[in-house]
Image 1 (spheres, rainbow, N blue to C red):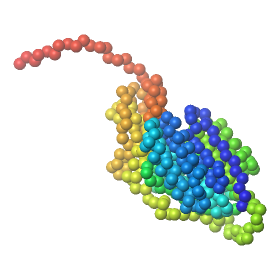
Image 2: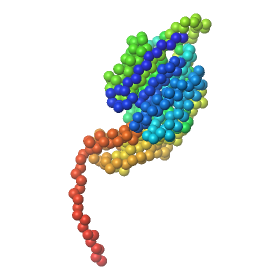
Image 3: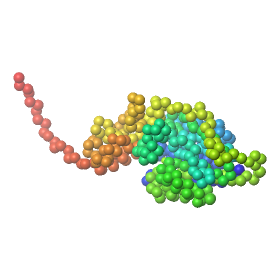
Length: 365
Ligand code: MG
């Protein structure tokens, strides 16, 4: 099996930094989407991929070990370096040395298999809304528009340990695997992505065109794409696959199922607390929270980090509603930018005229 690949990343139209990082060092490929204020996001994603890029990866087990080592490196760095505390990153990594692939994954970057003009997601997003979809509490369509769709349930580097999902799958000649950050699938729907993958034969052209299509569609986030093509081997294949399409599709098997363990409610809260920030309402005032809005089984999933003097009553109706729902932000600095905007649009109420301090009348019996 020969491998050809193309990779592309773009800052997009809105963000000031590209916090995504990509690694293409065959047989290892990876996409990481960092988070954290003040450039900490790119430190997180770069740190993770530098560990992965120098690790000795030879199979699924060593890929998972490398992902865990990347977790430790990001976590240790966030504790040692000022301004990076709470940083984290997604990581979707692929080991592709032969027809058997290994995927290791944490967060909401994705791996897809494009086969016979059909695009199928290999990884499962570790987001709060994905869990709500699986529990049947919201529909897939609602999830796509959900204001909290970017809240991660799991991320790399936010805790001393990390749960890593892993999959193994068999690829055949003509298969294409795509790794991407949410900046791609958040901007383009599956049909658009499949159309481009079908039209562009060259993997680099495919990666470039996918990236530019996501930017043209709005580019509200950083975009990263790696396209890996599997072609004919120069050595004759001793046992050509004879299985039917249906069973081949089912070969996307869960490996190391133990690792994909139930994530307790408390665990969700702790990870959310460390990794997520939002601007919300506290006692009628705009406040910065760490965690995610709401409570589960009596657990508050957030705590107030800072209360401003900005009254939610003074906001426009639209802003008040979004603040009450919670506006996801990347960290404290990003929160400050949002609050500044809210302030600008808030109804300016004139301060009450200064009153002269009158002597307190002595009560007469
Ligand atoms: Mg992103």
